[in-house]
Length: 415
Image (tube, helix red, strand yellow):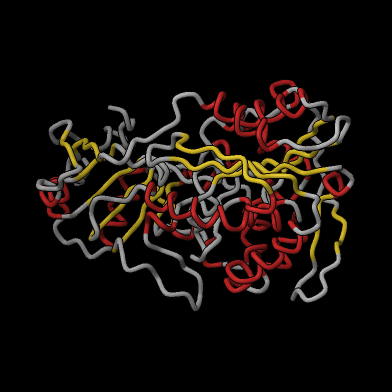
């Protein structure tokens, strides 16, 4: 019989601003930005981030470009993701519903690049071979705080232009320069690339705290650097947060590339684990347990090293090659280390509690979340719920109940 305390279901309220008609917003934005001669070959760059309505956004963008007389094709723009293989990156897109039949245009996937002039830069500048042969490029990506660094440009169109379009070669070139390469040098490289005129515009997406589309803007290439700064600040305001700063154990049901570029969003868990970089001031979590890996990750468990304990179920799903490629390209190897794998969910949580120094499990502050992208509903131990009793954005939905079944598996999140 498990000694874990019961958990009770809570709701956390965030700003719920969202677009009522995503398709119409994308259509009007792209129609205003799409300026090119009829017959142009246009490459639409789609990344590996999990976006709400991604297939709808891509399909609508492609449809508008085709209606304007363009010959359109999609390219995966995701650096080393998908195991740094063309087929792997095509599979990542398929997992999001972005297929040739669903979108209505070819997908040209390759890891081959051409090298562009890079005079004055500290690194080479690369461009996907198919994109280089196109008459124009359109970027589609979410704007959000990055999981490795903070600066005026983080995760968005600017980074996609340099590393996404530059494939594995660009990822290696920038990541070998560490955080400075990502934070300081990507904007310089993007300025050079945007100045070539190859990129026509970018479709920028900002999501709210509930993983719903809040903003879609088609930004002309000349304005991408400036407008992305503003949208990043908006994205920061929409970023969800855990309602407690001091937590003994955080249970995360799943990590994955579709959840965050680092599997677990470092902005949520308060851990970077990058040598030489200071850790965030909050939240302060003593132990983190992760119990599963999303199917959409295709075995890529990058970020698993941000956890302290995992389950044997998660460990069995790890594709060592895909995880190695993504982690070694980034260079932040602490994040790729595999934690201890416990045989059951209950055993994993008990180990995490002991590691956190909790002598009395019933007094431990435990939170359980579905993943770091969905924080609107969570489970809390009695001690954590008591600490949240006066929180203005927290509502108790149910009384405490057993957290695991008789064999030690966590009960389904929705129960």
